[in-house]
Length: 85
Image 1 (cartoon, rainbow, N blue to C red):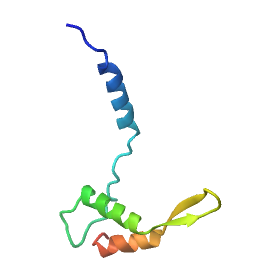
Image 2 (image 1 turned 30 degrees about the horizontal axis):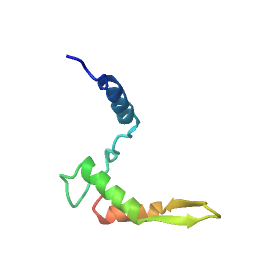
Image 3 (image 1 turned 30 degrees about the vertical axis):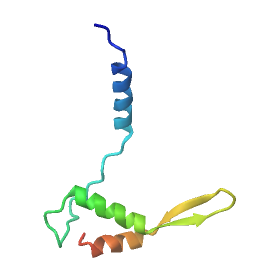
Image 4 (image 1 turned 90 degrees about the vertical axis):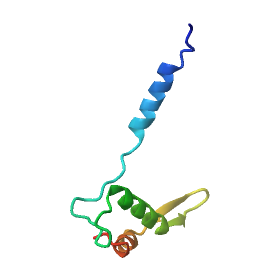
């Protein structure tokens, strides 16, 4: 039986992509959700991503030059409104 030889390169690419993916951010040890005590890192990451998206603004620069600016105070306020303390 002959193999096609794609197993090793595919595994190497998968390992490289997995190594480059940042781990999800866990809430700081003292950062709990007062409204939902059972919430953990998954809910924290979901809420944080939604708050960051809602408070990210595109700042025009010049020709083909623009950047995103995150209002961190608004993100913190958003997280607090969702129960994260």
